[in-house]
Length: 172
Image (cartoon, rainbow, N blue to C red):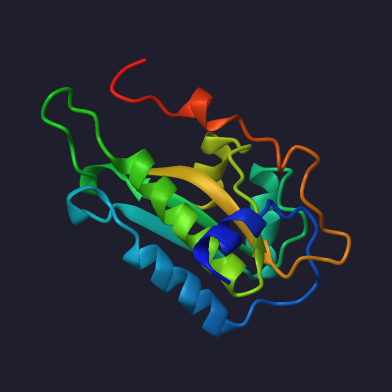
């Protein structure tokens, strides 16, 4: 499958099989995370791999959107490791972690796995449940696994704005 087909076919999976993800596939997803571009190659991403029953229960304390996935990645960034823009002191952590998560989701799709980007979580509870250091900010949970037969894209999955509403040449 070429990239355009892969990106177009990928959707948020909200129903997973009760089947573990093989270590080799998990490693490929993490390798894709490591290879993702980050500002000034500072690599501030910090990723928790959660696949033990007690870890998944802790995920369920943070969000109602695990969808019974057997594996969840918690993508975070370490603020002190992120690049900082001189002009306004904006740091790159959120963007870097988002790029990393996107690479992970696309790699998972290429391996026949489904994922969902979950931002619906309580950051304070997440910080407590996973003992995150103060400088580490959670960005997204990525429930990951084999899509169940009833897993379908949402009704809005194909709804896309026309390019002329999204792309501008030179100025607005």
